[in-house]
Amino acid sequence: MPTKRIPEFIVIDDEPVNNLICRKVIQLAEPDAVVYTFTNPDEGVAFIASLPPGSGPYLLLLDINMPVMSGWELLDAVVEPLSRIPITTYVLSSSIAACDMEQAAAHPHVKDYILKPLSVPAIKALLAVL
Figure 1 (cartoon, rainbow, N blue to C red):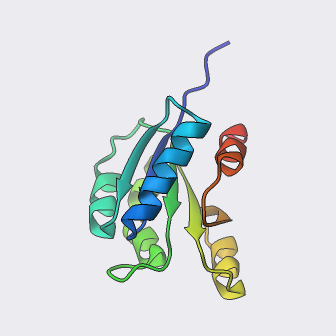
Figure 2 (cartoon, rainbow, N blue to C red):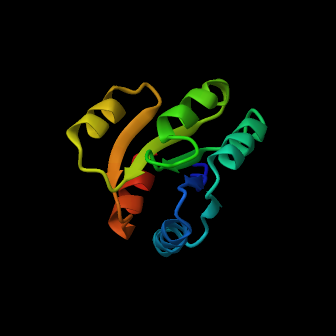
């Protein structure tokens, strides 16, 4: 039986402290995980667009409330890569607004909504369903 490949994580959040927390939590849950973090959404878009077909799987943890580009705008900007690369997207937000959760649930490229702060059990649950 082939070994299950550990996904690579892409974290896009304008708050450097949250990106650091995410990196540490992911590495506690899965020490072999590769974690890419971006505080600039444009750099995250460029990174995702540069991913070669056949690479992955990737788990994208995406903040929705960012000043330069919202998470929703970012998803619109990466529709093409999302169609050719296995990227499972989770909204990672501190928002408890029902409208944000409903928009995430209705979005075709969002698997689920995770409330900040990220936790080890949350990462292990994500990895368990891959």
